Image (tube, rainbow, N blue to C red; front, side, top):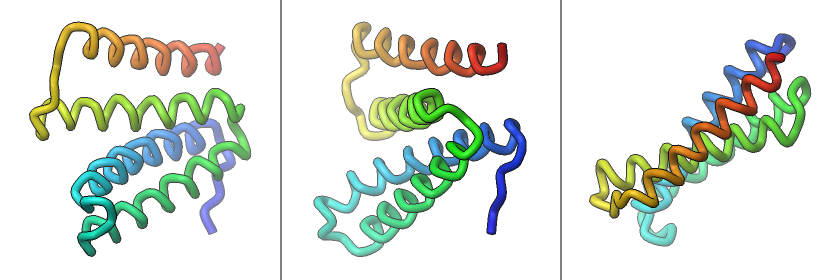
Length: 114
């Protein structure tokens, strides 16, 4: 069983779970409403692993901070993949909002370190 007993380990789990959240979202897009087997399997597996890791990290980290960073990593990553890979729009307002999320993630992590 994985044990996260240091803040570094807990933050590493948050980052890894956020990256898994990106894979979850993109695989869900490719699953076409869970009608395609392998993208559906990948989406479900990465979603479950992501939630498990974020849950472990919350044993040590504040729930609000961990959840905000986790969801922010997923949102920013999925948005950037949508823009770079799936030809989704990349207008100035959308990019500014992504930037605001990134600033919020950094701010929350810096606040925890203080």
